[in-house]
Image 1 (cartoon, rainbow, N blue to C red):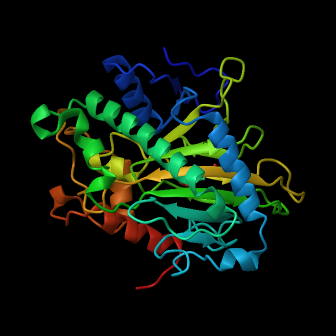
Image 2 (spheres, rainbow, N blue to C red):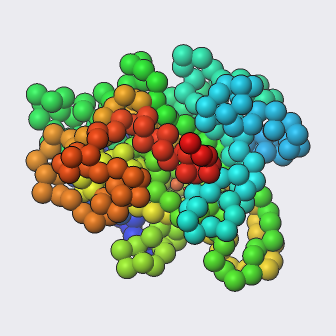
Length: 350
Ligand SMILES: O=C(O)CCC(=O)C(=O)O
Ligand SMILES: [Fe+2]
């Protein structure tokens, strides 16, 4: 049984090391109830030492002077182009309707290593093998989760069966918006008033996200149905889990694919307590898995989702400015959806 003791948001920890129809149902249940789940770290797929080394590398990179990081600014040709490279403090607004200013954080976006590795600044360039290995491991884990979800949703074999999602994430078939992202929240003065956040409220744009955090660096919260925020612990069960489990959350693409049955839950990062004081610095690492650019945001061939059409999906469909195909709207591709979301995040005009 998945367990959820000591975990404020009630997100279950699931062991997927022996996949079975029961495990698939547990994953589907968490994805449709919370939009979040913890995957027990088996110590092999994504070795804990690689996670530690990635955080160490991230720390080294963000400690560089801003001028050095700015040479590899996001979308610059030096950083390899679109949505790759360094994002400076305040540059990104995850909740532009409610935020007075952007997020007090920095980020470095890394695209898939194939067909060509993007140019890295030192010290990342000296560790490109670790970075690529980490990306591949994240993708392997994503594929396992995608396969479990397709199994639980009983997609008929004639449509691709348990391979339906994984096939649409097969990186050998074309480009995708998948991004591996290092995040850094520097130590700053915590604004008085309490409402200011380190990462504004948002849902993720892709299909699924893997999130790595450091013990002692809380701050992530999810929005519950009753409108309250629930903290997501880094390790919900430190006595039984030696390594923190890997946090997985469902992104917008899955809400579209499943008529809202799978929840792309809104979340944010807060300062926690301490108005007016200094915050501790915080690091996190995210693997935003996206389907191939060409993948259509059509409802999947599963009976389970056909009766499903919830308000959250309708709100989201409107927010993003398109109607569902049932209502005569256009069918978006994954690339069109991502382009729209990035435009809002970075305040770009047409
Ligand atoms: O830093 C975190 O813990 C979460 C960040 C996040 O939700 C995001 O970048 O999409
Ligand atoms: Fe997020």
